[in-house]
Length: 117
Ligand SMILES: [Zn+2]
Image (cartoon, rainbow, N blue to C red; front, side, top):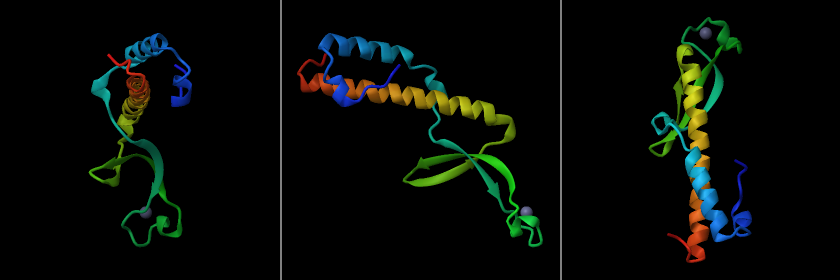
């Protein structure tokens, strides 16, 4: 569903906002797959002093999940066998989060009009 900004939402009637909210809620799926963060490919240095990675030829690239948890950034290694699963979880989470954020903007607009409920 094409995403509407708050300014665009102001141009819709109460009825249109409620219909849009209902359609958005129906797109939310598979909440059990919630996994925040973004996927990044990174090269790595190992611990061997004489290794080619010390001259800039990094190992990999390997896939990592970049996360913000507990007030700090972390990267979590994604094993090769889990790349497809993790990519699917992250994609579903992004879509669900986008739908929830737009529903929240609609509810703010409805509250502003005293039309929530
Ligand atoms: Zn190395």
